[in-house]
Amino acid sequence: MKKNVFNNRKLFCSAAIVAAAVTLSSCLEGGGNSVRQQTAGVVRLDLKSFKNVLDVSAYEAVYSPAFANMEEGTCCYIYYELDYELPENASNAVAANGYYTVTVMDKTEVDRYHMSSVADTSSVALPDETPVIDPRAEIGGYVKGIIFLIHQIKSPEDQKTNWMLSYDRENPYKTENGENIYDVYLRAVVRIPGTKTSEERHESCAYDMTAFIEGAALQEKSRGKDVVAIRFNYVSSINEDGTVVWSKTDKTELGTAMIIPETAAGSAGK
Image (cartoon, rainbow, N blue to C red; front, side, top):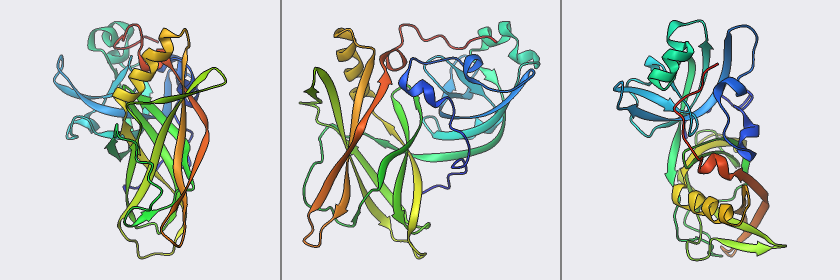
């Protein structure tokens, strides 16, 4: 588990998770022409500039030399400053480049997992499985099919955990009270046991759920809906006989316009 340096900082534009994607200029907070904020993002090699940039939504990206040696597809949180007075952040420059230029003051990579299309709903504990307290203690961001989740778990700080998120491709949703609810299933397995005292703590992960979430968004959009309702199912305890107890959260709504935007502008001016 990589250290999460952002636990005590405000998550970037959390309201955007339940609404359509928004631009950096409308989401950032601060006075004057310089702002500091945190965001989740995914590293991408920009084929126009041949520089690594960080996609922060379907619409926008930021650039910093701090991304130069990172592998494409790496998921991370950054804490950064954006200075609108820089020539490279003038509206015409941003429109031409497709990204804002920022100064990264802190950066933390998070483990990236691929969501399985075969639902793991077994009532028997996996080898070295550990229960989860809260599967979505925070939603840290959403970028082009990748959702950033902060899980709550009780474990030693130095424990290494593998996380598994799955869904049923053949039956991805249940209709309840006229609404489609898309169930996903989360399990955690201890990869390397820790040596310190167990305590309640948080772990940050990123999940590539592109096929699942885009399929759900298309389905809901065809029904005239503007959100996808996701429900997290998780192993909350393990019995002495090796069976598990499944629990579930309330629904979490993601905006269809954020998942499958009509157009994906590369950036937005101030």
